[in-house]
Image 1 (cartoon, helix red, strand yellow):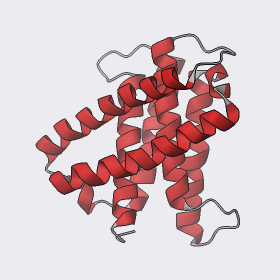
Image 2 (cartoon, helix red, strand yellow):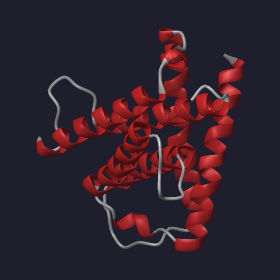
Image 3 (spheres, one colour):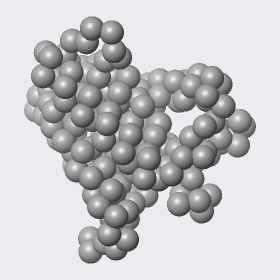
Image 4 (spheres, helix red, strand yellow):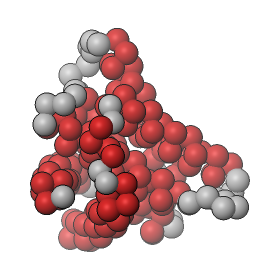
Length: 181
């Protein structure tokens, strides 16, 4: 489990570094995104991964690990946007962005620890294709929740689906780093 925690933290740190550098380059332009727009951005990345997996070739430079890192970062954007509950043209200071990123990343990490305890790291035996498919399922669930005005009867909400997306993408990155995909 200690190895998983270290690998998880390293993969997440790479994602956060990219996120913060892009925030310095672009500011917080993502603050304008509504939930459906965040979902669509992740959907595009997950579908691209799935297409590359199926075609076994690609023509655009961003590789599969880069797309999984983008998925992590967009899902964290989604959590931050849910938290702020007011998508708008708004520039957030870098320190506030970092704090929001770290708070939501910690939430995802704690969920991973709890689920790993119960599931015994079953994800280590999963394929990269499954991670892409499960991310797509979570996105379709979020779209359905949005069509239901954000309400669920017995299911987890949008935030829990974003957390699962973060963890699936990080698991894929860990296994790619181990050379298993």
